[in-house]
Amino acid sequence: MPEGPELHLASHFVNEACRELVFGGCVEKSPVSRNPEVPFESSAYHISALARGKELRLTLSPLPGAQPPQGPLALVFRFGMTGSFQLVPSDALPPHAHLRFYTAPPGPRLALCFVDIRRFGHWDLGGKWQPGRGPCVLLEYEQFRENVLRNLADKAFDRPICEALLDQRFFNGIGNYLRAEILYRLRIPPFEKARTVLEALQQRRPSPELTLSQKIRAKLQNPDLLELCHSVPKEVVQLGGKGYGPESTEEDFAAFRAWLRCYGTPGMSSLRDRHGRTIWFQGDPGPLAPKGGKSRKKKSKGAQRGPEDQVENPPPPNKAPSRTRRARRGLPEQTAAQQPEGTSLQRDPEAPCVPEKGKRRRQPATSGRRRPQKIKADTPSLEPEETSAS
Image (cartoon, rainbow, N blue to C red; front, side):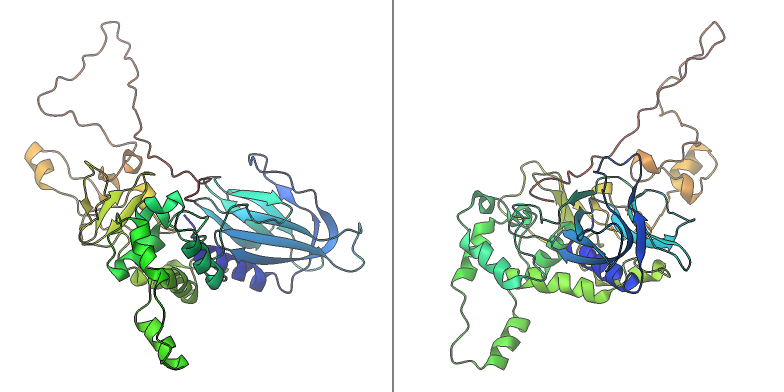
């Protein structure tokens, strides 16, 4: 799911790509989208973007003399699990382009598209940020820090720190991979009580005898959790790339993959939190770990992430199919694409079903007509977008 850094990279892409472009005409919505129509039409307007936490505001500003006369219109986007912006030729729209803004003549006609494969993304008219979301961890650090420490009596901080970090009332912009990286760097067990972790920060005060440069150095060398909620997303933004731009390639994600230290990396353990989302960690999970929860350890070979664990364009899985069992059965070897790894959604639908040992095969009906076999797909659960943890 796109998190704070991805929204900021998207706003930067829109501002850079559309800086010199003039748009015109109606805003076009795909018929399958359940989001509202955008009642805006102008002969000439500019587009600009601003991100705040997990939201992005797009502003359509008519140029002087544009027809019909009207003021700017703003839309606020939440990307869901797969939302992004792309600028493409108008005759080569990408699949799932659910909102389109077209450039005005002269010149080649382009389209700025909001692309959302799973259709979990939303846009609202009016330009107001979603009520209840806290200050942005990237752009409003001082307000963010004050908002957290002032509200530690809230019941949200009775929960494990890994769950509290997803509460957008206090940590607007933090998501699944960021919480894992932040807790890992501080060696904080993910299921330690949030209030226990954060109350210690209320008394943390730099020594008045330190100079300003010494205070800055001390903060950089020993950051606390709230400081990392600001600096770690900032590192991702500074990496750049993440698929934005007309020449984006697989290499754009290499730096991000190399940057990850904990999330989905070999040697790390994982548990599902109360919301069903996977938290990656190392060592003791903490006193509030779910009872009966089985910790899974990320292996270096042959393991894949579940759908709830995927980040944007995750690295291709390292497939290591076992040939011993197939050789023992005398069956032909399968290619990597046919291996039934991960969920059933990754199975080759054309691959034959092999009956398990010791079970009878169903005999065909005596009438000569075979009853079609029902195949039950193992559909992965999807993370809810519109919760306090989104």
